Length: 125
Image 1 (cartoon, rainbow, N blue to C red):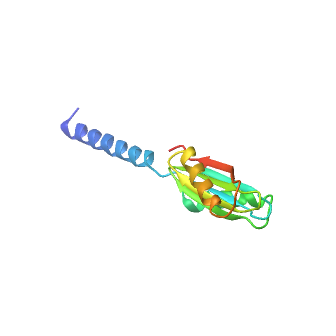
Image 2: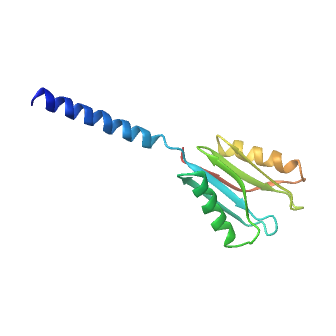
Image 3: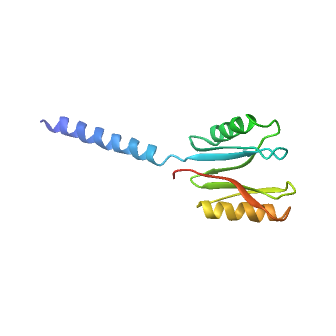
């Protein structure tokens, strides 16, 4: 092989590895939508954007209720929604399911008693 061909192949290999590395580090988004009236939820995870994650969660929730709203969105993490028997609710996110659930329970507890987690979701990153 000539030196020129070796240089071209080396440059192409470096460029290829750089592109793969950029794709590997893309953010993963998730969201949970919630209906305060019915308690219905919809969720998503590993979406390519916040907008896509929220849209998927809303679409899933709206299959069961008309008053859905995005309760939480998250990226490269987990999200959770908690609800109290009186209808009070809260949401939270964290680097783990446990942390997200804890944040959601804390948030819900500011509004009502006896909160429990009704939905959680995590991205794969």
